[in-house]
Image (cartoon, rainbow, N blue to C red; front, side, top):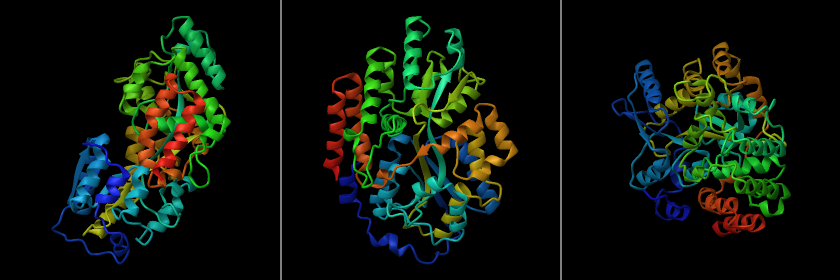
Length: 432
C-alpha cells in the first residue's frame, strides 16, 4: 500500500471537522452486544493478545484485536477511516497524532473520567508530547516512551585494549578507526540510518542535540542551516562513512528493529538506537551474542541530549462505544487494573519505558532492568531527553519521509553539508 501524503489525507478524508467536537459531549453508553475493536502495529502481537484476553475475562468485555504491519499501519487506518470504518481504540505514533486529531479521526480525552489523575502521574515532558499543538488537549494515553542511547560492545573494546567507552565523539571516531586499523572490526560503528520514520531522522535530531544544535525554531521551522552544531554532526557522519567505519547495509534496512539485529552478531563496537533495543542485545542470549550484559550503554556524547518521543493509544472520534473504549484505553495506557498491568508487562517483557515514574520504584521492575541495563544510568539519560513540537505540524509526516534521501545523499557525499542542510530547510518550506 502506498503511503498517503498530507494533501491526500486532507482532500479525501471526508472526516467532518465537527465530528471531533460532537464527540466531546457526554459518554454514550456502549452496546453490550457490540464487540470493541483494537488495532495496532505489529510488535509482539502474542503479548498484546494475552493482555487483551485478560481484559476480556476480567471486565466481561468483547475486545477484538488486530495487528497490522508497521510500514502499512497508519496509511491502512486512514484508508479505512475514509471508507467509513470505525476502529474504537488505535495505536498512533507521535508523528501522526496531531494530524489525526485535526482531521477528526481521534478525540481529545480531557473531559473523560480519570484523565486528570493520569496527567498528574506523567513526567511533564511526556505529557507535553501527548498534548495537541496548542497545548490545550490530551490526545492519547502512553503506549511507551523511548529515546536514543549509545550502546557499546564491551568484549570488543577489551579485545582491542580500550579500557573505557568513548566519552566524546572525537574519542569514538578514534576508537573505531583503531578497531578497523587493527582488523578487530571491519565496520565498528552502527548508527541507526535506516529509512523508516524511526531511523535516520530521529538519529539526525539526536546527534544535532548532542552538538548543542536546534533543529526547529519556536515556530517549528527547520533551521539546521543556521546551526553550527548541525553542520558538525553531519561532517562527522560524512567522515565516518568515507573512512569505511559504517556498514552501508544499514541504508537498506526498513526498520530500527532490523538495524539493531545487526548488533546481535557482535561485529560492531558502537550502536545508536532506541533505548529498549538493549533489552534483546544485552539480555536475550537466545538472540544475541552480546548477552548477558556484554553490551552496555554509556551517556550520549557531547551535551548528552537525545531525542525522546511518546507513542500512544487513541480513541476514535466516531466510536459508538466511547465508554467501553475509554475503559480499554485506561487499561492499556493507564492504571485501570490497579497494578499498572500493561505498562508493567511491557517493561518486563520488552524493556519498553513509560512516563509514569512510580513504575520504576517497584522491586520487580528494578530487578528486571538490572539483568540488561544500568537503570539509574538510563533514568539519567531520560533527564536529558528532548521532545520537539514540530511533529504536531500537519506537514511533519511528509517532511520526515522526504528528508531521509536528502540526509542519505549527504552522508554518502553526494551533497555537501551546507547544501544538504539547506535542502532540508527548503523541503520543509515547500510543505507548509
